[in-house]
Length: 144
Image (tube, one colour):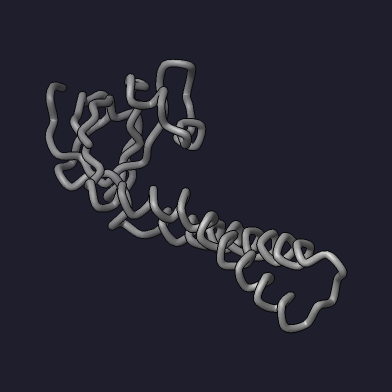
């Protein structure tokens, strides 16, 4: 996914880029996590391998495989954990009928597994935000 923006700050091998929200942003469920700078733009930390300077209009890119991995982790992992938890709770309820109604244990178990996935996502967010492989990269300087 290629986007354009203007470099507003540089530090080390990174830069902060102000990018306009595009039409694809409106349909994104994660649009509020891009650190909105205003209603029309957002600030994004990118890798700056070509030494772009403050004020440069640049083109940056997020690799498709990174986008797919993060989408899978954010949206599908909690659902998978919920289903596994509900299934495990149902299996335990068959063996040990702790409650008179067999649906209570799967609901509790599914909820606990879902909550566990949220805590795992918090940890993974810290990992992804520090790992350079998952950051967008400046590909070219369009104008100074």
